[in-house]
Length: 118
Length: 116
Image 1 (spheres, one colour):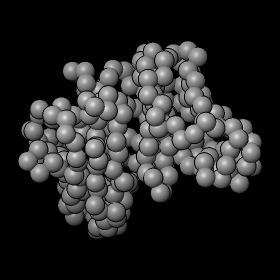
Image 2: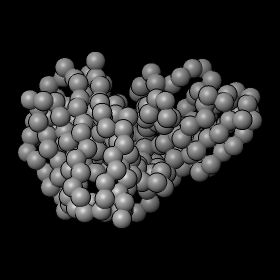
Image 3: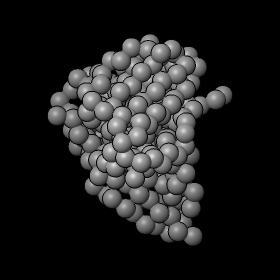
């Protein structure tokens, strides 16, 4: 079975450029999450969607960040304009059911996008 | 406030040694979930286990075992007879009712190095 697919795997761009990260969740999963991992702050949840609707975006750092989920099989995280402090590994994850359901369904993570802003 | 503390930043062991990774959590919720994830050098995050707050039974899966103790708010992870392939960063995470369960809070991670 295909897991969560993220693209690109690596992105290097100059400050001020627009960056778009892409994610394809596992088919049938109703929840999609965007995380950011840095040495300083560890793993942080940026935003998550349920049935394509953003539920909690309190982790989004600032207005330069935006996320969309136009359909059940695709999500984007956009940074415009990008800054060097945005350099991090960005993970997308999906899950079949909420964590409080009776089933033991965890969040499945993609391989991440390593973003470097010069 | 919800918080996960993994006090051990790095652990280094020799192959075949047993090693325990500590995880201490804080929450006022009575219903919550605890997780362990593994991040090998390749970078992906691999789910290992999920426990809910009502189930304090310890769990064993091969060389891996988990000890959940509500009295000390700990969810420790033990690898028996460690192997080089166990080298990775291990994260403990907490999901709570007040956080909507889906908003996992991760600890800082423990980097485990297993040497031959």
